[in-house]
Each structure stands twice: as C-alpha cells, then as structure tokens.
Image 1: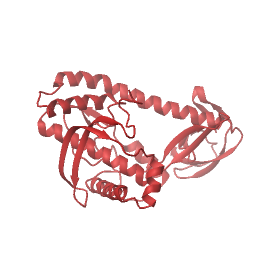
Image 2: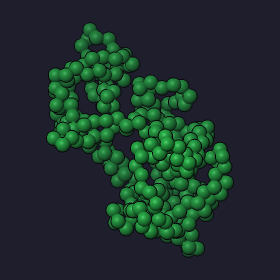
Image 3: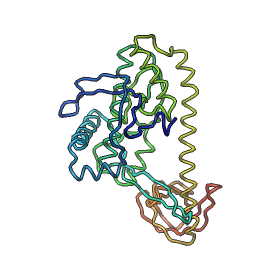
Image 4: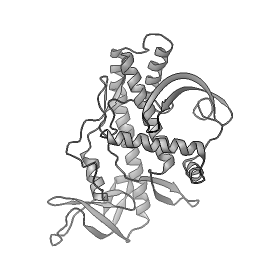
Length: 313
C-alpha cells in the first residue's frame, strides 16, 4: 500500500485529498477548498534536489519557497517559536560501521515542505471548527517557564528551552498551539503512517460528501485514549533507538577525548551534552572541579554499554 497504491509514483494517477489554497503575496490565506481528487506527479524530488533547483532559480519552486518563508514569518509574528536544533541521523558504511551526521532542518526545501504541511493541518482544523464537527485536536499550552522568542540562542539556550516547553496534548476541544503560533491545529497530512491523520481524513471526507461526521464525540474520545499513549510510546521508542545507535557509535571510540558542554549542574552530578552528537550524558565531577552551565570541558570516554544505556565520562 505505502509503496504502490498510496505512493506518489511519478506519471501515475493517484487518489488524493487536495488543498486548493489561494495566498496573497504576504502568505495570508484568501481562499481554501478541500477536494477529493486525482493527481499525477510529474517529478519526484528529494530535499537536496529541491535545494539545488532553488539555487538554479526554478521559477515555480522559487515562488513556493518565498511563500513558505512568509508563512513562517506570519506564524512567528503570531507568537510561534522555533527551536532551531539540527536533526541527528544515523547511517552505516559498507563495512557496517555506524555513521552519525547532523542535518540542518532550516534548508529552503525543508522549510517549504514543513510550512505547507503546517498550513494544511491548520486549515483542516479551521474547517472542522467551522463545520462544528467533532475532531481530535493537537494543542500546546504555554511553556512552564517564560521563553525569550527574540534572543539569539546558544546551544545551551536551545537545550534549556526544549526542557521548558509544555507537552503537546490531544483534546476534542480546539485550543491554541503555542509553539506553532496557531489558534487550533490537528494532524491530517500523513494518513499512511499516523492513525490520527486517517481519522481526520474520514471526518473531512464524510463532511465533503454531505454526510454526518464519520465519528461522534464518544467514539473520538475512545480513539484518543488509545492513540495518545501509543504515539508517546512510539516517540519514546524512536528516541531510545537513536540513543542506542549513538552509544554504539561511541563504543568504537573508547579512550578518545571529546568536547562536551555543561548543561546542568546538581549537587552530586552534572549533565553534559556532546555537541557533535547532540547526546546528553551524566557526569560526576571531582569535588575540586567547579562547573557551571555553559562551560566547555574535555572528557575522556571510559565506558559505553549501548544495551544498558550506560556511558561513563
């Protein structure tokens, strides 16, 4: 299903839900229609290919990229906040060695895709609110501690900001999403890989066909009780899997010295962040060593046990 019937294969007709959106030059939505459709993809492009085409001044992609910039600027002006940490990727060389790379998520192609997906999800939420149809919304309360949106951020600032953010929650009542700077939000852009998106599609399509909503509030409440913890477990598993492979990578570097950033200091233990991997680790400093958050230190890698999630510096 994911590789054929529901995959955007170039040259093949595929069923879709199209968002026909008219934006003005500043990225404000003038009109939006949701339509069941048949689409035919002309070109399948990777992120890096799009960035190259933008460098080559591809007119259509260039217009989309500029609109994405304005969409983002509008969100941030409405109170959104962007946590600009790079993405950590693990891959393997032909000999099976673990390779780790940090990927900039701020490239024009990433921004283009990200902003259009956020726009689509927010317009779906607005459509469901307008229709008075029950739906599962994604909301984020304000941070537990104030975050300065305007300040230029160091790696320490970003790490601390991430810890201040409130958890995203599911609710049948539309509420603001603080991080995105939007009055309401849901998931609809990935119905192949997320069940919430599929549920949202069923609601939309039933309304577009003039029928009653596919799900009632009681059914959605039961669904949310199942998928909310399931999505949290999936997120935890993703983080644990990444951490395992990062430790596996470090296991081949025992005895080496690494640069680390002090991000937290407690009475008997500190927490360090290894910038090249964005991996945090506990550290027990000698009594004579006075550390404070923001210090850069050199540490030696003494022991790594990936399966036990253990690292000794």
